[in-house]
Amino acid sequence: MAIGHNCHLMPFHNDLATHSMTMVLQENKKKKYRSSMGTWKAKPEEEIWLTGERREVYSCFHGAAGGCSGSGGGGGDGGGSGQTASAWRWRGQSSAAPSCDAVASACGDDDGTGTAYPKRIRVRASIRYGYVTFVPYQAHGMKLAICLCYEYCASAAAELSVDFHAASCPQLESIVRSSVQAALQQEIALAAGLLRIFFHDCFPQARTQEHLHGCDASVYLRGGSNSEQGMGPNLTLQPRALQLVEDIRAKVHAACGPTVSCADISALATRDAVVVSGGPSYAVPLGQKDSLAPASLDLVGDLPGPGTSRVQDLIDLFASRGLRDAADLVALSGGHTVGRTRCAFFDDRARRQDDTFSKKLALNCTKDPNRLQNLDVITPDAFDNAYYIALTHNQGVFTSDMALIKDRITAPIVRQFATDKAAFFTQFAKSMVKLSNVPRTDRNVGEIRRSCFRTNSQSLVDFATSDEEGFAASA
Image 1 (cartoon, rainbow, N blue to C red):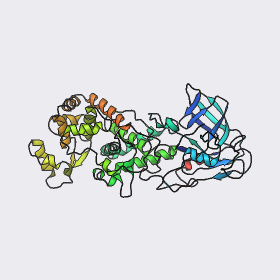
Image 2 (image 1 turned 90 degrees about the horizontal axis):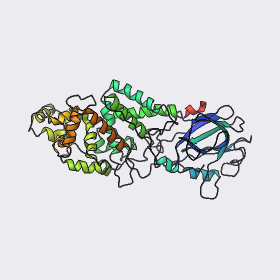
Image 3 (image 1 turned 30 degrees about the horizontal axis):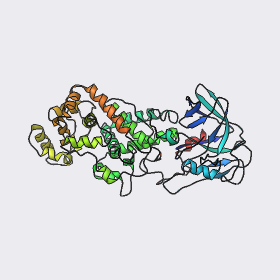
Image 4 (image 1 turned 45 degrees about the vertical axis):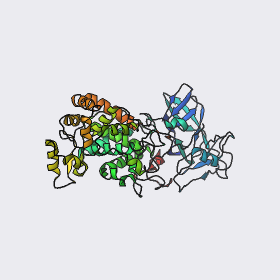
């Protein structure tokens, strides 16, 4: 099996004498059996070679003594010769984990063609009803750390899909959904917090003409002078919503291992928050990686501001992110149907005093610029189309909101959504999926963070003692 660069791997401790491994496979037209853990050229009852690699701390074992950099052990009986297994471990201090080819080079098995293969462990497989159970070909009770690729490598890893984690973490969506439901029962305002965080994560890095990363959880990174959370537009991101995603990540990784990115969890949590609040459900494209660094200040500064009065500027800004339909702008602005803002962010609107609603805003904000104001003045805690109804009555809080009802391009869309909630829900779901799946130069760049607030290089967890990976010890 040729391995591409930067596979993400699931640690799987196994006593080969007593345990087996089961995965869901699908047979494609080329007669390869493929799962989210890798691709095998195999037929029922044939021997299958598994790769042994781990992203941060790699243990490669073989039957011959002398260390993994030597030859031998890859063929024949693999790890089952009965000799003491020797191991090579990488404990990197830099941000870059070893690629599959780099590990393969250290462990031998290069076929001389430039394609390297990590050390192989020989097993037999029985494929029935779409499942494959791996049983050791020969085993002598050695404890081996078998770390299987759980994502497609090379070009296949670049594709997002709604069932990306179906094999590696089948309970993912139920964990996220139940966590969001419980959190919103305690604090409904978290829905708006999750929506805003998701938009502030995806939008800045979605410029289609550049080498950028879209939805990559970069906004979650803390510490250092370049953290996005310390930049102007993000100073008021809701801390409890940020923490909720981290709490969900811990639950997901406890159940499935570090197989799901914070970016994917954030996208799912945002969708579920919309649903719990009364909004539409939609299929979320998954398979995003977490960024290795925050977005730059100039990109974060491109977030649309509440004081924007010229709709064409907003249309152009959204188009630069691949959201070229004016309906995308109007529908995503509908996220303001939930949430609140501080008076300081719409003081230009309140100062106008040219209509009854402006006077009401000014009265509410006279004494305290930090006082909160509902963005949807009709049903502030429900995800519905009341935001658009309010706009048709000149009751938009932000200047950018009111601009939508006054512009010849966007006003008809606002009126349609005000009278047809289903049309709004359909377009909102479509636009959210489009935002989630913005073009990305290389989806292989990134990692699966073990804390949403830190890159893995900032907080490496020892392979042998990590509590988070202890789930695998009894597998």
